[in-house]
Length: 489
Image 1: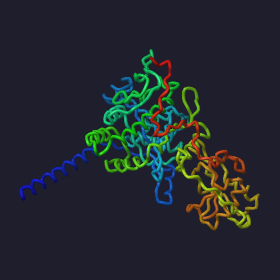
Image 2: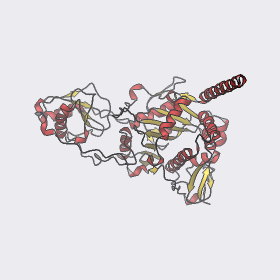
Image 3: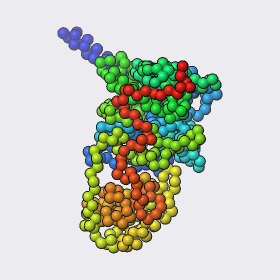
Image 4: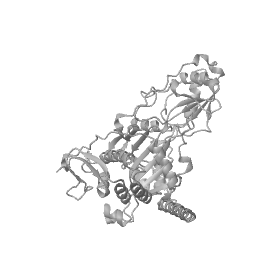
């Protein structure tokens, strides 16, 4: 019995040591980089916790087209690309709601034209000045690494990003092999190839196929053959792949299949580059639990609404900004959030206008537009004309806000705040209690850059996803990519 006990103790100790060493091995696999390469003042504020103390989670997923390894060069691209700056050819923002009940995945086409912010390369210290003209957003990766792509998203969407994950060509192939194949569908035979030698090389017969390895990479890179041959069709194919992969992982990567789990852990940790906040197996495991909590039917995959500008695209005014607002306000893109109750009008309980002190802030700047000069003073004067003679412009606070709001510090000031809002024709839904102000405060956002009466917005009470976002539900296993007949065989 003594010998049995000693033997068992040795086995347990040996297993524990081996487990610890393998855990450290996986940690060593993970590459890390700075979360942002932008300046601190560029960053939008982090979302405030809900009443349960929960906050939403925003993760930027980046696909690099780097050919700077033998493996990546073999999988695509010309040798002339070796040594060049990588491009962020895939950019998807994964938004997990504060209560972890739903998830939104939003793609921005790689050729979206935006002004790029100032970035500093964390390895070389080189400073890339903010561009004065619009450039393709995929260039951001070569201006300071993934942290500059994060900074570009934050500057142009106002969404605070918590983490990023980046993968290259060879990483996609190894991950796809580890998963064991991801089902995708085409509505006719496809061969992504042109007489000039362009195309991903994807060749599939009509129907559903489980793609893995290099074929999975071809699927994710295909433009010639899907839709109009632009990055838009490719984004749709990536959404189909991603939602299908989520379903496969939920069904197959369980503790009953340790071999697959070990292979997936090995390949995943070698394939990705992440920020320090995700830089360990423990942190990635905790993240996976957050993601796993969301059922596929509550996952919505969408594309940034856009308009064509020649061969490039630009954010579609109104629709794109509405999508970013929904993410900032943690609104589920599937429309299944509880309807917000109608605001009760208690402005008749307010003090006389001449007794209400009002502060007015100018928050009209955006990632693309500067502050409107004198905006706070203009609105303060307009309020004075309505009898609010104690209205004053606040010149100290000019942080940008996308939506005009009236804030008040406590319930005793709610009626006064509503009275001020009605004088400027601001919807009562925009009157909010906030611990960030000490009195009734009008904040003129980027949606109100001119005039002294708030313009009626058709979507003031509308939190529905714009149709132009081309949404796909994560549980939809019937989706099939439409193949351009010119690329069929």
